[in-house]
Every structure is written in C-alpha cells, then in structure tokens.
Image (tube, rainbow, N blue to C red; front, side):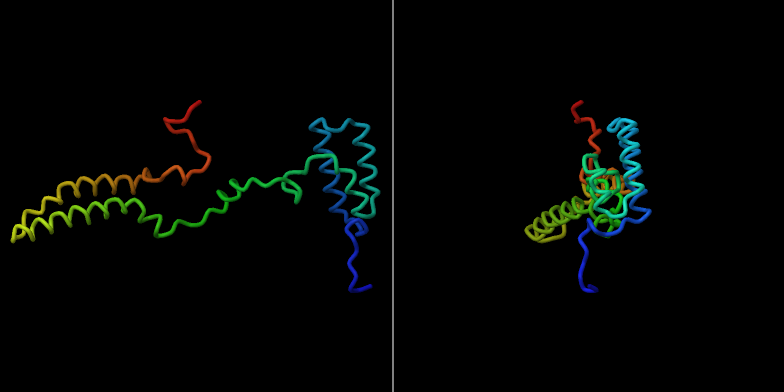
Length: 161
C-alpha cells in the first residue's frame, strides 16, 4: 500500500483544512450567501469532518475564498506586482528617435559635403541640439513612458468618460 495514492476524498483533513472551510463559511455568512441556520449546520459538519471528501461539499456551492487555489487570479495584478527590473534597453528607449534623426541628418550633411567637394557648415547641429534637449528632459522626467508601461491606467486627456 506504500506505492498506492489515496484519492483526495479519502485523505484525512487537517485542522488547517477545517479552519479554511470555516473561514470560507464565515465569509459566505457575512456576504449574505448563507443564513445563520445553514451556517451553523455547515460549520458543525466542517468541525467534525475527518476527510477532505467530507469538507468539499460544504463549500462547493460557494465562491472560492480570495487567495485559494480555486479563486480566479488577476494576471494583470500579478504582473504588476512582479514586474522585472528596468533593463538597459528601457533606459535607452527614449534615445532611439534622437539617434535615428542624427543618422539621417548626418547622412544628408555628409552627402551634400561630398557633392560640394568640401566640408560644409554642420547645420544638423541646430535641430539635433533642440531634439537632444527635449529627449533629455523627457528621459529624466519619465514623460517618455508610453501607455504600455502603465497597464490599466487610461486617465489621459483622450479617455472617454
């Protein structure tokens, strides 16, 4: 019998199992799902239960207790609670647009300088300087974060009430 597993209905109930059932019954009483007579009857049965099979029917018609194995899980809340630490990629994200603009404007300046046969005045410095200041301000203030960084937060100016 050592290699044989008992079905859950025949496993002996622990004090913790009876207490969890009693808590779920008490919650159902508070929520108005059970009247006092039904609560007393189920509580007495829970306290005298010897197997998990005797406890299961006492709460089968009740919603699962929050945090129990049967309770639904809010995956978005779990994800927010266990969000990974920010990576270098997240720190560099606001600078992608600046780098792209620098490559494009620098390329235009280089091609026109080659076509002119001499190094022309580095005019891309002006627009790049302006974009650099704006990008740096956004990166330092955190304004560069998009809606995907704050799931569930739709309180922006474009949200319909």
